Image (cartoon, rainbow, N blue to C red; front, top):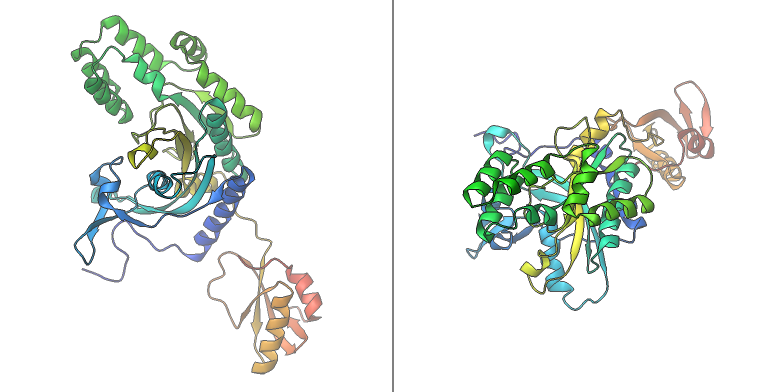
Length: 394
């Protein structure tokens, strides 16, 4: 076994990519803050039994020193639900919580998938109803737009309406049908519904509803009585009317995670073959850890968002300039570097082998208040700061 590379599914993130991810993080957290969401971060490690919603095969487990079975958090939505139930049990108002943090999931070795990646999102706990669902949907659109993503589509469905299509089935059979729909196995779902006693006409109606696209969707929504879905989309558009293209009804939309109960939505981009983000109403989740409370929210898969942005030609702004300062007398060099940094200039003394894509301005120390550029000009601290710009390297 080689120890020169990270374990399977984990990787080193080098400075250029890390800088791009930081830019995405700033854009997303600014969007969350603009809607009144407060940041938090649950621990990376939880008791392995706490996370029953994803299935044990996705947990990365280990034993701690006293023999307790622990797991790296595979999902932050569930961790927030646990946190809310324990730390905010007596809170009476709305909780608006946001996060940007890594999650860890076991993946089959043959897939070569990442087992650690960043997840960003929000949870709105307490309010229920169409306005609350619209707030989460609008904030997802706002977040993608602030990150710089164009040509994205947000599809909106309703888990409750899909469950209603199979209302004639026994609860256990209906749960199995819903699981197969979440797995994308419509053929298996309809076969199981038929074997469970669902009539041919009811199956045909369900098949037509879940297969509706384009112009046919409105008539299907009306027939299914899903006024809630249309109003939530309308309210969300009133909150945020800009790009990306979003609010496309799709009753076939069934997120893979099983804890959603009502309005659900996923964001897609042509440059990525998987959903960039998923969310919706999850009223039963907090109740799994304590008193049930209404909740809605979403989670953004940050690497997929990064990939979509990159595919669309996005690059972070490069206003920052790194000054590399060829040293002279050590004391003089230290004082000149300090003066430049007080002006907001990023300074590396000597050469820089890694600049993360930043513009580089090479200079040589002349004295405590002057440096010489490669073109022969000798500039004061003030002039060099103006030449470099005053944005500090981030």
